[in-house]
Length: 318
Ligand SMILES: NC(=O)c1ccc[n+]([C@@H]2O[C@H](COP(=O)([O-])OP(=O)(O)OC[C@H]3O[C@@H](n4cnc5c(N)ncnc54)[C@H](OP(=O)(O)O)[C@@H]3O)[C@@H](O)[C@H]2O)c1
Image (cartoon, rainbow, N blue to C red):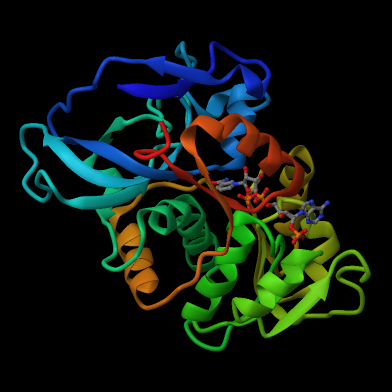
């Protein structure tokens, strides 16, 4: 099969097309013929070697986490998926995952996939997978947003996680305030944010006091120590990236009435299924662009510069 691979850690433009053996599914696994994928910051962090633990150190290095496609082989003991089923999901972010989605086929455990939502394109399903589940697990599970009428603030409105988190916040019944810049402001309004704040012209949190149940720092750009004044009693600041500063914040928060959390997104079929249902109901995914898989190096360089959701045509891209 064809795949896009880096020879090892190094510049993004070292990613080239290779020929790799077609993987075979084992017990509890399926093989997915990949039709679409999407770019995540983790892809360039792994290839550049800045966050090596997000992937196994295998060579050549095929990255790509998000995927949508059709099952073309099933291993023993699989009875909930059959050949021909359209599925979507994402591969695990961690050192034991040696698989990649920038390839014609990949092996997925049945616990890593759900049926692709009907009437939703492969590109949109793939582009929603990591970001959508990250938003669900951050806002609902870690943030413990109240069931209805919660006050949610989301940063990184033009980014992959931040943009989908706006719509997911609305699905979770929240009043959503989005923080963004440039095109992100328009994206946030289009996705239904109740209030939009331009981070380039507004000091944050400024004079906002005890207003939010959850501040979801999808952009991983802020600290609890700046934002805790804007949280209600019992509210939570959730980040997508742990840092030494945030660990210190977490310790300090133990002596306060608010909480700090870091998400570590995990595939859960129930969360993928909920996301799929919302996509079928019209949850929007804001795509910055769609590229062919042979252009992932250029796409990742673009993602590094400006953020945003970039979908990848895999099946028709080689
Ligand atoms: N821990 C996990 O499980 C997990 C899962 C998924 C993603 N992540 C991480 O989450 C982060 C965001 O992912 P993504 O896919 O949304 O990335 P992205 O598409 O690159 O978006 C990042 C967004 O952050 C905003 N931003 C950039 N610089 C900023 C600054 N200095 N201050 C405030 N906002 C800034 C920008 O939006 P505006 O210009 O509109 O503000 C930008 O579009 C990445 O670090 C990613 O690796 C972690």
